[in-house]
Structures are given as C-alpha cells and as structure tokens.
Image 1 (tube, helix red, strand yellow):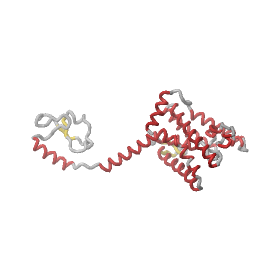
Image 2 (cartoon, rainbow, N blue to C red; image 1 turned 45 degrees about the vertical axis):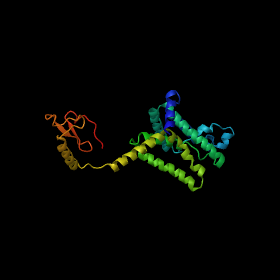
Image 3 (cartoon, rainbow, N blue to C red; image 1 turned 90 degrees about the horizontal axis):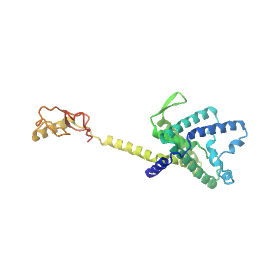
Image 4 (tube, rainbow, N blue to C red; image 1 turned 90 degrees about the vertical axis):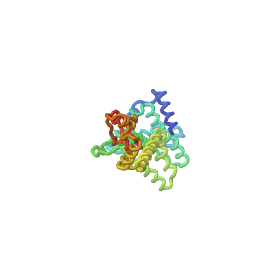
Length: 291
C-alpha cells in the first residue's frame, strides 16, 4: 500500500498540470443545476435520464457513467445547500493540501470504482440504477479530510461546535448501517457497493491509516511498559557507586567529575528517566534519557 501511495505521489509530481482546478466547485454547480431542473420537472423524467443504469448504458446512454455524480443527494433545498457547502469546503481544503492533480485523481478513482462495480452489480444482480450515487464517493472524501484534520472543529447546524473526528465516527456508523441494511435483506452484491465506493480512501490514505494505528499501538505499549523510577533507590545506588569510583558526581555527557573539577557545578535532570547528573555546561544542553 505504501508503494502504491508513493507511485501516485510520483505521478502527480511528474504531471503537475493534470486535473481539474476547483473540481468540487464544478460538481456543486452541476448539482445545483440538476436540482433546479428537477424541481421544474414534476414528472421526474429529467432526473431519471441522469441516474446510473447499467442496462441503459450498454444500450448507448454512456453519459450516465458520469452524470450520476451531479444528481443531488437530497430533495430538500436547505439540506442540499448545507451538504453542498460542506463538501465544497472539504474538497477545496483537500485540493490545497494535496494539489489539483492528486485530488482530481482521487475523485476520478472513486467514480471509476463505483462505475465498475455498479456495472457488475447491475448486470449480475439486475438491481437497476437506484443503488448507485455519489453519496459514498463524497463520504470517502470526508474520511480523508478527517484523517488529515481530526481535531478541527465545525459548527453542526451552524451553532453546535463538534470535532471532525466525531463527525467521521457518525459517518462511519451511517456507512456501516448502509452495508448492514443490504445484508439484512440478503443482498450481498449491494452490501459491497459502499465498500467499493470508498476503496479509493484506502488506496490514497491506507498508509496514513496504518501509520496512525501503529503509532497509537506503540504509544499504548509505551504507557503500559513504562516504569516509575524510584528516585530514592536510584540515588542510593548512585551514591554507593561513587564511593567505589572515588567521586560524587559525574557529567553524563562529557564525563567530567567533581573530583577532577571541584569548582564545577553539577546538577541532576528531573526530565530524564533514571538518575542522571550533568555539569553546568550540559544541564541545559543535552538529550534527555528515555530509558
């Protein structure tokens, strides 16, 4: 997975002009236009002409391979405005973080994964177009944002401050619910649709996710294995050793002792693990002992 992520970064570095600048702006505008036309067309014919349908695609209606991305996720004007603004904010931030090339590649990868599996599901499972949409693609984009900025805060419903990571957990629950709901009706093919749709998240951010998990595991093991230093016992042991060695204090950096340099001031560092002494030249200029 690390090699794949590196290959993607290398491609983007070699092709800086690849991609569509302000891609999310075009997607948002497309959603607004489709919403306005669908409101004028009460029959729903216009909207049905844009939805993903494998059978009709094979009959020549190839525009459906892309137009399903512009179909609004909500028919409520207020909810749609909030959703589109939120996804525009996320997409714009990720484009600045990654660059236009990588962000465009990410979104295209999500569309391709959805289309390929949608064609398979549609042809094998005969489920038509209703299972396919851009909601899971946008959800995967949100997961990337939460991976980069987990501690960022947004105003839920414009007045409730909440961290992005908590919203990510809620979205993960929504994602899992979508999978479970299909499994409960015995439709395994449709249950895999959400997973395939966010496959691009694991392709582009899988290494970051694994690094985060490994870091949390190392931190947990470090806390579990860390021992509290018995300072009195360590001091007593150090004093016994100094009686044998012929000096009381010795700098752990330069090795100078109070016997060889009686006018030199020595101190002990409270930030180092264990019982370590340093001369006045190194008490404020040394690497802290961790073991």
